[in-house]
Amino acid sequence: MLKQVVNTNTSKITMKQFSTSSIALAGRQTGGRRKAEKKFDVDFMPKFDFDDQTTIGHNLFDNIREVRKYLRKTEFELPKLNAYAKPFEAPTKDQILKFKSHIYLGEGHPVEKKAVLSVKVADLGLSETEKHKFLLLSGPRYNVNTEELVMSSEKFPHRKQNKKFLIDTLQKLIKEAKDTKDTFADIPLDLPKPKQRLEFPKEWIRSPTPATTVQATTEAKITEELGQSASKQKTV
Image 1 (cartoon, rainbow, N blue to C red):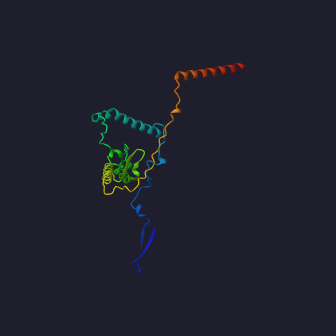
Image 2 (cartoon, rainbow, N blue to C red):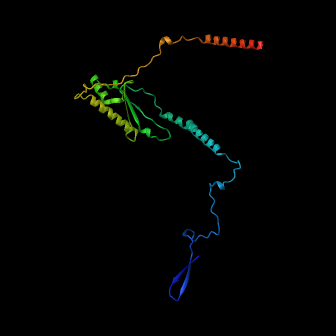
Image 3 (tube, helix red, strand yellow):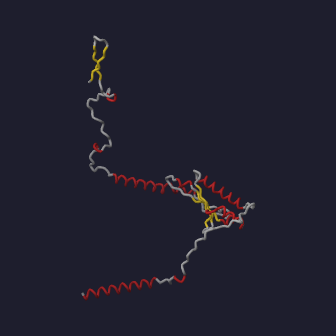
């Protein structure tokens, strides 16, 4: 405890006591109570009496519950989808565009917005002059091995927007290719050479051996080996 001296008069001196305790402890009179025990502190954890599953056991039970959840969906919910089933219809000659996209079930992924368009150039109905200009405008997006134009887009946040953008781009390319103001006939078309498919020589193909012949040959070899081993044991 410190004492503060206050001079009110030259003849009178009074003494005033004050405490140096912190503000946080002011007014707290716990009477020597100890701090509350932390619930998840290792020092205060009760002793394990082997009356419960371990962490690995609980993880195993969680996996079993997850599998059973999907089994219940397969048993009771999937049959309800038969009402919405539609028979497969092959694409018509007018449906020449093919789209490719990725979907991750149960989670989101940035690649889900991406759309890929592919179309056979021969199905676009272009003349040789228009095809020459179309391939020049397409650049490296033309695949010489499959003779397809392949374009992809992930410019927009939704897949349908990227599909619409690819369709509009294809229509612009076709419109420019059919524009006869400038046919680009003086510009050579430098396309890479398509990959050559290697074919297995027919003369290398061996005639098929009947299964009975193979089985008989195998049995003869086994019998011969057993006879040789038996003769060696007798000589020993």
